[in-house]
Image (spheres, rainbow, N blue to C red):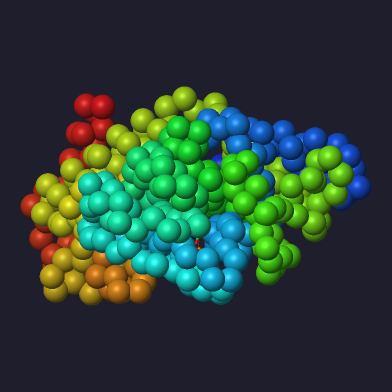
Length: 378
Ligand SMILES: *Cc1c(COP(=O)(O)O)cnc(C)c1O
């Protein structure tokens, strides 16, 4: 078996896999399942430090992003798309599909948003229904300060939709402090459950805005209002994937029991960056690093496809390349969720240095040694 060290999907712990194999009831008809689902959603709210309601939708992370845009966007709505990464820019497509008018605020892709520049822009331009932004934009690994951006948007009455798929549970998110209106997560990233579920955390204000639309939401599956009264009415809009939700619940309990989870992510990410740079490789970002993924430029003269292939085939460790304008330009080292442990990251860095040596690219230091040294000092 290959070691999956990609920035999602991540390795799934045995107790999560076991939970998915349990015998199941009929989740539409068995009232106990409504309690179980609600308790699981409440646990999500607790871990995100919020009074806002959470829903678990049957679909991969992208469904959460689309559902947020589908549910808020009415034809002609102006939507601010905060673009300093590939997923950030991608929000414009969802806005357009639902008839909105995306307005891009594009900034340097090699760092987090500059708050002064954004504040100056908003001072002049604030006629937006909502803004869409990404907490950790995985293709570059940048982490944006949602705890500053969302409250700033609120001051102008702009709702926020935050893609936290790649950061949730690897980085502590306090939804109430952030005042974020819709926060989206995915099962397969730092939560380390299998692919297939998206979690959305929705503010009362966002629900009110959906209720007050002049036009109906142009979707059923991506309509967040269909979940609003599930508990009261004991009715789900579609049959819930009960085994996936058993797994998700166990993964959430794993997160809750792990008191060091955020510190461990931060330590491992810092030690990985130190290892990469001491070895003479170059990080893609100049600043604004997220704790769940490290993005490294493909060194001069190295073919990224050959490098990735050597790592997988010869050393059994899978890391990720990239897509869009970064295809072939960077490699991505995942250290999120279950992958964020010293043993696996050491193995990944060792595999990378061996593969680079095989391709005749000399490093200035052993990444494995630097990483181990750094982690000893944490
Ligand atoms: C993984 C991820 C998603 C979900 O997208 P997939 O590519 O389909 O897995 C959405 N947003 C971000 C930032 C992600 O990292």
